[in-house]
Amino acid sequence: MKKNIAVINGDGIGPEVTTQSVRILNAIAEKFNHEFNYTYCLMGACAIDETGSPLPNETIEVCLNSDAILFGAIGHPKYDNDPTAKVRPEQGLLKLRKSLQLYGNIRPINTYPSLEHLSPLKAKQLENVDFIIYRELTGGIYFGKKELNDDKTKALDECTYSKEEIERITHLAFKQAQQRKNKLTLVDKANVLETSRLWRKVVQEIAPQYPNVKVDYMFVDNAAMQIILNPQQFDVILTENMFGDIISDEASVLSGSLGLLPSASVGVCTALFEPIHGSYPQAAGKDIANPLGSILSASMMLDYFNMQKEAQLIKDACNWALQNKFVTKDIDPINFYFTSTIGELICDFILGKIHGDVNHENVQLRKSTII
Ligand code: IPM
Ligand code: MG
Image (tube, rainbow, N blue to C red; front, side, top):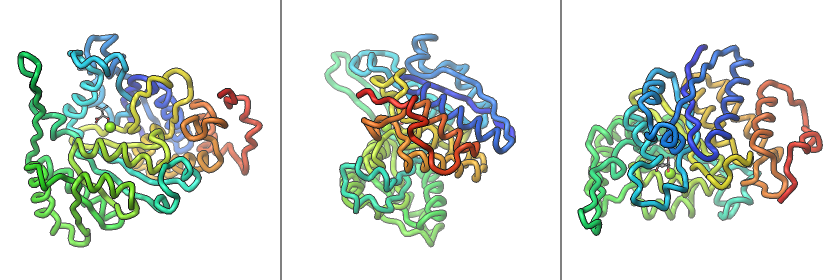
């Protein structure tokens, strides 16, 4: 199969982790006889530096004409502490989501037995955790009216949702629940917010079309607690934009590292695949960032291309790396491997170049022992 992929490296560790994913996609192409063509484009702080805009029109064009988008990370500290900045890197990502109508953000959460010690939760709570968050991505408070009064003492962020916006992601979430454990939890704040009451009404209206799916409703404050207390209860979580942003970072704590989590954003046009982590500027350029969030996002991209075998092989390779302690600094601060070494090992696994146990001594040269 031939696919055209738009690659947006973005900021901070974005380029390093994305480079590994492209390398792995190339290994997949070689093994399964596919052709992946990449077009690199700008977005984020690097785009502001080069063009003055966080999302040049050319990037939107390339994305619209591609089969999928692989994106790294966005953000730069020089904007974070400057509330007066008129142009911000994140505006690029938000505009891209809106321009491509990427309304459904899908974030799978699972745990790895070999990483249980990294989570602040007790091992028992982490067993068999496997749920998926469906976060609405193009509506709500992120995209509502924003105002600051003239003397800059009053600000407004409006939260709006239309029935149609809720319906389309709700159908996606129900369909996913049918492929899984047939359970859907709507996370909202219907005891306070009008928009949340609309979400409940729409979900209740749609539920009879999926009679085998059990639906329950949870207020977001309670959900934040339940994700930590009893994460095994969840299968598909459906929620609005801002709640989804918050609870997905929270849920990453279950896996052991934010660096492991992939995501897919789907909608009307080209789908986008990105790790859920940020640009992690402190680690940029050091070859220490965890590439698995990005690599697993590439696996989600292959699933989306209907290349299930290929997608599964990437997941198997990542599991193999984790089980054999080929991990980055976020997972093992003492015996860690570089980002590029992990990418190389995963490629070797995919290409069948790894047989039996790998001697850690043999990869030792690329391993950092300096703390
Ligand atoms: C995410 C990020 C983004 C968001 C930022 C970078 C705008 O936190 O994808 O979760 O808030 O949606
Ligand atoms: Mg976030």
